[in-house]
Image (cartoon, rainbow, N blue to C red; front, side):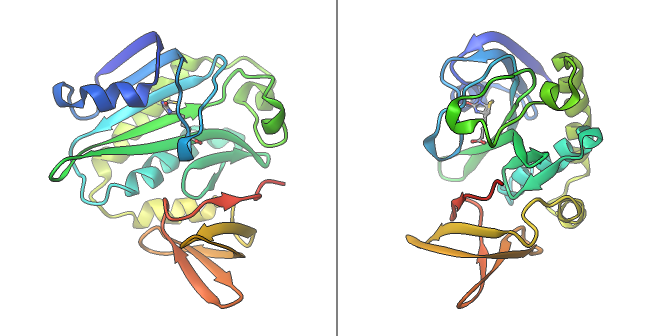
Length: 234
Ligand code: BTN
């Protein structure tokens, strides 16, 4: 993988969005600090000595949303000693708190041109904004030691490359690993679906990667992007 590193840029996702045409498939961009880091749902992503990177995908684009699950599975493997879980489809949870977030973005013209997989892993943050303090943690807090960010990024790149090379639009194996390490299993979730606020119990992830939720009125299958899950952290 070609690796570009910046000390500071607005956002690694934004950098790839603006430069994807001249960059190769599997280019990875990392930085020490973002001045305009972006999270899901238009939120900002505040960093503090954390691991921030984005990977450019220009091939194997048949099912773009599969890349959330692919990278989540890579992170599960690399972080396995911390017992991570996946909160479908975009967060990595350790000890009931969020340690990493994934922001998948795409560029579409007549067809899909590329996918950008943005990842932020809380590494050395020790203090979180008041509104996050009960639901975020970092690897250094969990392990009570300092984490070598470059080494961790190297491990993630190696594992992602292997997972990407093995990937051929089929997510059966990936899903089975994610289901074995699934944070939402049997949890009650509130969500917005077709502009309605609903709730239900998470039962499964189906073969296409959709979340299967049992509601009062029956089973619903939720596609990432269609729903916002609320209040699921302890
Ligand atoms: C989330 O909301 O949980 C997703 C957060 C994703 C943050 C990462 S940090 C690197 C990349 N660049 C960005 O601007 N965002 C992603």
